[in-house]
Length: 168
View 1 (cartoon, rainbow, N blue to C red):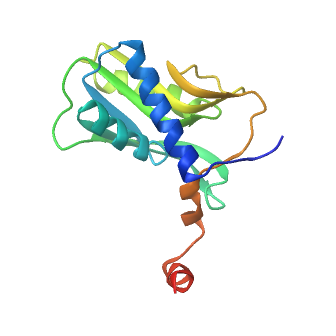
View 2: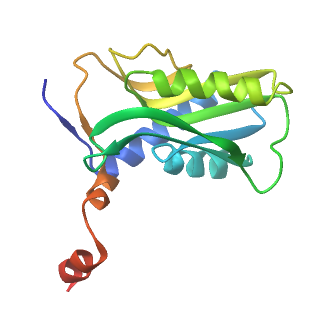
């Protein structure tokens, strides 16, 4: 299994392809909910493109070893947004369905905490074959389950002094 290295250009293209897939489906949604941290950039782009309010649900499972070791899944107690999210249909976005546990539990948690929402669909950039979750929208299926190196992960190990030295 080879690792998958993703550049900023490739990452942005995947986000745009995912947005087009959702748009082409014709499904109308009232708000975007992203899973932080991996889904933050996607949520921001979708909120802007579709002109929908954005909510953020904080999750954490890859905390150890600079984000390379999965631990116990934690889900924040509250959905963060400037005001309550409207409507009965929400789109949940994240970067990937790795094992799928985060996506499955986040969907379950959102449904339990927000019974006024009649439908929640999910969208991810990547779905690994090992995932138990089947997102409604996905750009790339990864049958070999590679470790994905996303462009923003360079900041996991970089500290401000090192950044300053690198920038000159």
